[in-house]
Structure formats: structure tokens, C-alpha cells
Length: 94
Image 1 (cartoon, rainbow, N blue to C red):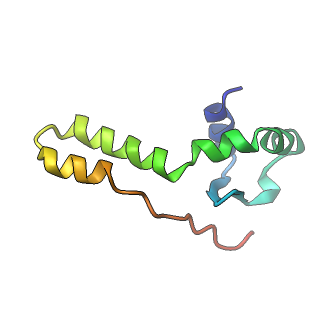
Image 2 (image 1 turned 180 degrees about the vertical axis):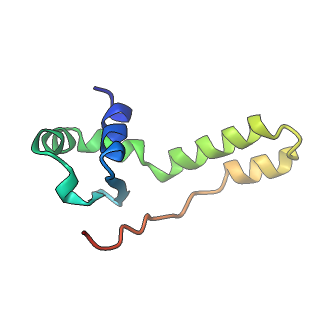
């Protein structure tokens, strides 16, 4: 199972997943069966890397550049040099 497959499985179960620093956040915890929880623990570093804000930001900029080639190159370069600053708000558990 790839990391993307694991995350998709969690999302299909209604689990919201993200990161805050080196911590993995997910809710509701009750929607994660023990076998998936074991996989999450074993592959925590990979999951955290998947949600790396800089990586996600660069992918967004690349998609923008492809979808909207008319965007001025100065704007694209400015966006590429920005660092994404975000943290998902997970709210409270069930």
C-alpha cells in the first residue's frame, strides 16, 4: 500500500489527517481501525513528508502554472519562492 493509498483509505473512512510540525494529526480517532493505526505509526515519517507544506505549496504553484499559462512569469517566480505557512485546524474529536 502506498502512502497515498493509505491516506485515501483514511479519507474514505471520514478521517481528517494532517500535520503540525513533527506531529501527525487525525480525527476522529474512532474511525481508524487498529490495522490502519499500526500502518500509520510504522510509516509516520512518510505520511509527514506527504503533507510537507513546502512540497504541497510547490505542487500547487506547478499546477497553477500548467492550468493558467497566461499567468505572468514574475508572479509564478514570486509564488515559487514563497514558503507555505499553514496548519490545518483539526477541531475537537467526536
